[in-house]
Image (tube, rainbow over all chains, first blue to last red; front, side):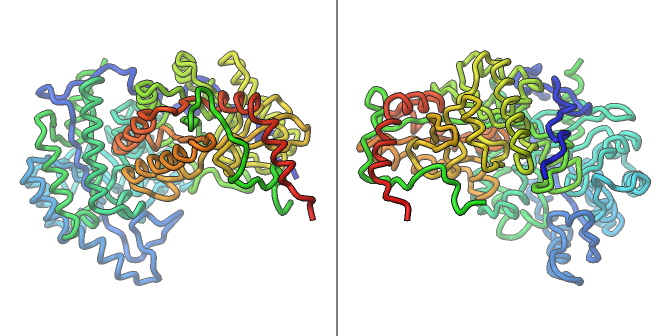
Length: 308
Length: 306
């Protein structure tokens, strides 16, 4: 039997996007941006600090990096926990060595469970972003709206309580959303979120509760994506980040400031056989005078003062 | 359902009539940027889910939007630099959504061929009349926005019916990119008996197949492109070959992949006796100069069906 004729009707076939969340705009046509000190590249190192529960529900899917074996999946639970116990302290040393100002995206449940780690982040002065409740508390199409509203409110409010910080930014677990996630974030006082990977620069995102900024945190260049999803080598990770940096620097010299966003995980790059590649990448990038290492919020502030 | 699609007879690569490209070129080289629009909330198709999770599929949708917002201008800049006119595999609804992209490609005299309406609307399950309506819509949309009917077709998301090529030939098309059986153009049998051919559009060199399906490293992709060229160029000294690089702005135009792509373009276009051209020009040339001879050779070499 043939499909209903509705399948050949296109109610959103019109100028611009097929939704009302943001306007259509090509990056190359936008006003050039200059970073503080006349720098060309804003280096945004985003660390994902994640808690993967052993009793994962996996609804409506298992988050990348989550449990894959029958309960109790000790191998994956402990391998992810390794990042928060060991890998992150290698990251701290690398950041300090190369003068990198990282952004810490943390699951609120992890902030509750690891007060020492939270204390270290606070005393270092790193920016804290809410990364949702934990890696099994997903936001997804068809989710019960009341459940999701409570989930967002709990994650944001509790992280603010624990940290004593404003917490301006958000990254959904698995970067997945429901149709109302942006509305809920704005209602909870979030200023920017990093789930949409459709740009290399910030842009305004409309919600029912005011405007958010979508911040461009590259997924294609993420350590987990390159090493675990694509199964590329550690050398290839380094090569790809350096190629990306070289390209963006060249484009920035022509078209205005750009952002190099590195989404990294201490359970991945914090391993002994990988940490050296992160250090080499940071050494290469921060070896350029044209680089401004800043947190997501600082990059957003510098961007915003040049708009309008 | 048939044992085989029936579009062509077996035609061995060796001992074919010599294929000679214009100006004595050994290889016809074309780049086919897929400029696509994926919908955030497309209607369901019983045979294929557009996204792996319930809508909104933010990661999948967003990276494809990146191709149009960010990647397109990067690839266009590179193709300009190496004197290449793109042959666009177009989600034709993009004419309505992003007419700026169409205008920029028109200014450069790029080719537009049909890739359906949206890359989230599949051919699966359409009746013949519905598929004809969809193909006619796509052809009319390209003609309306560019002033010229498309010559080529690549089914949306490579989703086909048994009649896809028949229908496209009947609305006036002359070539398809949907078949991967050869490194030279070949005649394709359609039910109307019209003169219709396949132009090689490589799945192996397709950046999305390389990066998403086969997960190759960017530098390795660049090396694969060069190796593919080297062999086809060498063989082209005997009889002309075709090399196609099908691209997607959300894959090849990411910052960490452009260097490898540029190095390959520089390498390929740095050779003499390469005809840097478009899909339509290859099809037109083959139909005018080589098609009849090819048909004759195929007929002479095809045994009685047992």
